[in-house]
Length: 174
Image (cartoon, rainbow, N blue to C red; front, side, top):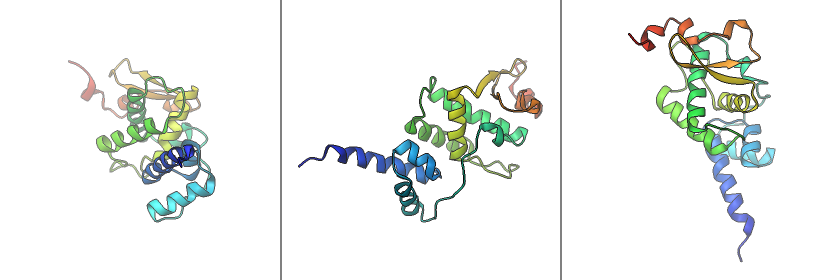
């Protein structure tokens, strides 16, 4: 006998495992893989050998932009996400996994001067905020790079982080 839901459940389990391997929190796995809270927690325990991290998700990307270096790194993450998902109409787990894997391959998760590494949770919040219009990429007139503009951030983060860090000579054309 074929159970029509068996294929769906297997796919959800594989997806949940892939998310757990990348550090997704319980609520993200619940939402993206369609599992219950207890199922998501069990997947995290089995996959990582650790207890799931508790606590709420950040309300917006505004809470994650602690300094210009993080702003620059999250801008790079946003560029990768939008390059792979030009019109993100929904939070697609596979798109988030592809984005995360490419970002980690290219940039790693932490810079030597970052006290807090970039996480999969931050990608999820970033993608959500880009999708609902709380953030967008803007192209800098000076260096030509796209940078993350957060509509809920204060005035200290409404400029190109690459130029503010003094990196424009690396990107400017002679």
